[in-house]
Length: 169
View (tube, helix red, strand yellow):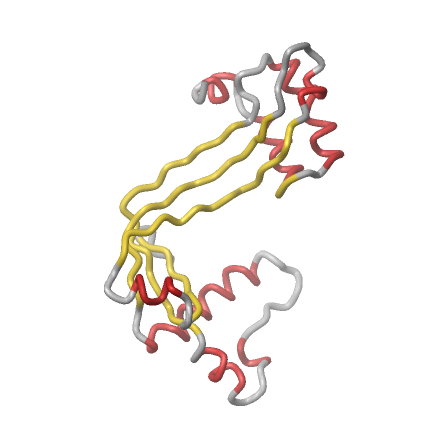
């Protein structure tokens, strides 16, 4: 069962991040669910400006390097989680690697944990616009595909109840 008070990950051994987390360091972990440019022309009303819509989570805490004994389980858990999302594709496992190759690659990375102290969400989904104006932007936004996970951003713009959208005004 995943631990909700920490995030496990790894960094490249020769990265400055490895040195910073050796004894623990304040850290900010940003998860972007998607973002997209919004042209003012798509609103269909005068006097609008360009904007960027997004959904993100900011996790703050202390990042701490873990010992090498934590690396195999950390990598296995990460791979299993991400590979499961690709089903029905058979999951990749380290057993598919040639003898010694996976172990050599592991020497180049350091496992870490981020001990979570706070989580904040932030989003901008044109929530300051009337429903009909915001809805006019969804189709051209999805067609343009200018950003990351743009179709999902369009769906969120349509799905969020008005009171949720206005909470960020």
